[in-house]
Image (cartoon, rainbow, N blue to C red; front, side, top):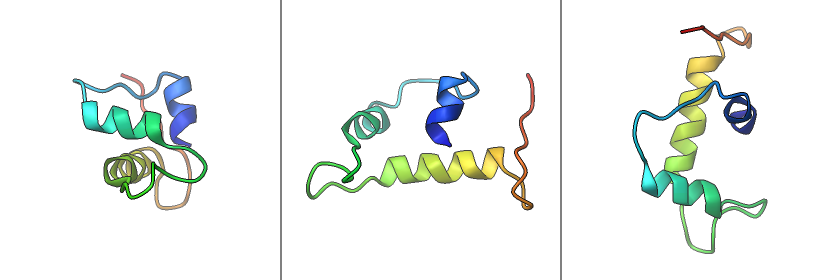
Amino acid sequence: MSLIVYEQRRVAHAERFVALEYQMCDFCPDGLSPGRSPDRLDALVWALTALLIDEQGETRIRGI
């Protein structure tokens, strides 16, 4: 879901998050580079899930 909302331009960051951007670029099907934790990427996915999906699993998108 995370990539889709970025592709649809429904997510924007207020400032640069260099460490998060590095994790996003380093992530692959096998995870991050050996020995690396995707802590920031995990937090982003949880935050987007909480903000974009309600308790019943329905998408809740608000316009600005």
